[in-house]
Length: 449
Image (cartoon, rainbow, N blue to C red; front, top):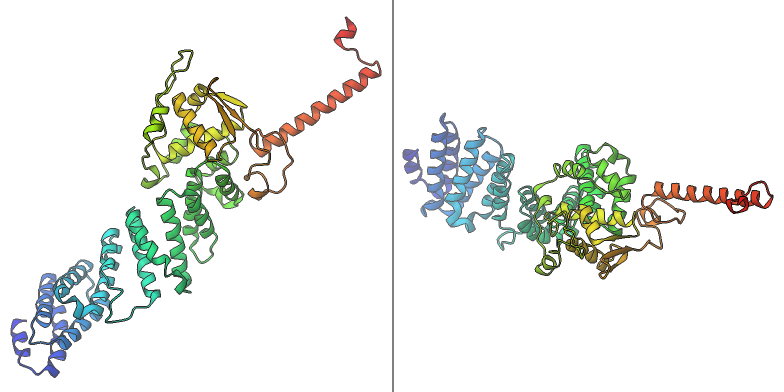
């Protein structure tokens, strides 16, 4: 290789391009991978870094090598990756002069890293692509595709902070494309960004919407539906979550999901048990099990472990520790409001596995945010629940289940229907007894005495 390079250096500039390019095939014909890599390194170092060769010849040779690599002439993936990384290192000092070829090589390297599931490294390689160079024009649609791909790769490694930066750039360009695949990838990134940012209501809605898109593979749509249910369960308890739960509960496809049981219990306002929670927790991803902290004021208010009678609380927990903890506790608190008219701080603490002070703090926050109807009597240490004047969104028109007869708010729709039937039956019995009494056919206890 050294001898041929020395010979070609004496040629005219017109003949140097084809001559140096012919050495690419010579290098690839070597049997040993180390020899291939060494010959290509020597060739590229000569045509790029020696001023006598010239920029035109350098670009011509590098463009030919990029084409050979893209065609898969090197079947060994490890060798191809090694060669691409070596070329990028050689060209780096003069990257401005070889921008187009370098960008092409970065795309190839990102593909190789993605195949090896090196998500963050692939994203880092794509970040190095110059998209705003003055030397060549890159369309907004091409920029959008690169940004969306970077976001997708970063989210695979749970790097939501950096992913959001590139997502914001993509959001400014999404209106420039009509490509359906790019639009769907962007919508999926939206859902995943919301999921990682703990905006579970928004994420559940977007996942559920995507699960209906026919262009997406059936198995992928099932994963999105499962993600929608998971996010809905983790969302803050309240009317907004009830809408999402109602929509998912009506979806016939959710019956086949492993999380269907907890979805039903959430929708029907049943209290969740520890065994059910543990089973659901096993399906969660790492970012959905993130630790949460409480403020110093809430920690102080939650520190109460005994009531006025001196009874020691059964739990010493002063607040939820994870996102799932918080979601389950808020749901059980909301479910208890459908069962009881009032409950003591200590009783609620026992139900939620919290200190009485922590249970009061959670109830106070939910009342302040309009997610729980009621008020707190701190003198008697009671939380009074107020029945909704209108049906809950998950059970009324907003939930999409149609008109529901107004009944006492005792919980799930089937329970309400049963309670209404009991009231009607007892009223009819009382009317019959009164009618028989008036006719003298039956006598009351007072009349007998």
